[in-house]
Length: 355
Image 1 (tube, rainbow, N blue to C red):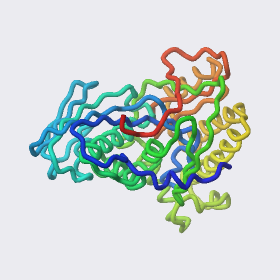
Image 2: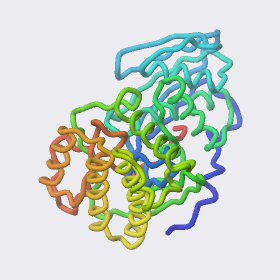
Image 3: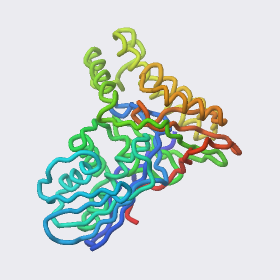
Image 4: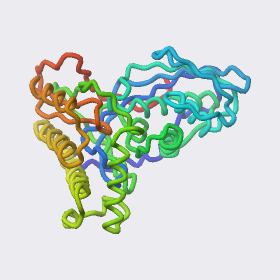
């Protein structure tokens, strides 16, 4: 396995010393190779940032309010930066970031991006990171990467109402271009793993069903895992062992078995990437999807049709990505393969940054 990068855990954002009157920040989307639903279970994951993402332009305007325009949606919002009232949808992200950062001056924000919403590519973390970095840059403030990741996760949990873990935020803030990021959620150790695809291609295909972690069965799965931990007397499923599975009632036994198998797949995938075995990586994608479908039960008929379309187009492996119950499917294609129509190449990209 690649050695832990000690630099990553102390990364500071945005790394500027003086305030500015206009700042532009970019938050990338992310694709999770292996390690789905393991973050809130203290497990392992292997995401990477992608080139597509969300850009926020911030301009200092004075006054006591923040005005926001979501250019792609043709919508806008304006609110006092001191104790902003609660809102829903994308407005909750903007208001939550402003409140949690403790913004102290008026600003005008413009949001635009090329990342599909609700496709399991972490448009929410991309938006949160871009908003936070733009506002930090505007005020000339620095913030540690881990502190910023936790702040963005807090906004998603408490302002948006989506009980996600730290996977998306760590991926978009700590990724490096051309590499995947192995995350150990029990210790928060981060390892950078070369993602050398050569002429192979990773691509996503939208199932046509938008997923929302705040309203889907995602919350049910978290509660089932918490119940399994209570019955087993452990803090997280990272502590579970194979013998524990037989002690649990259905469907909790299936949930635990999936988490155990998925954690093992993460390190098997790291080993495959290290030796350049992309056929093995494809096999692991298929195995992960089978677990998500049969044991964790987060697939849908539309997702299954999308997985089949990937296979028909020549993918050596494909699986649902994100929280499930819709969203996108990730496929791995050998050189020369013709991707399905409307597939998006998941090109590994840089982390969130000022641009």
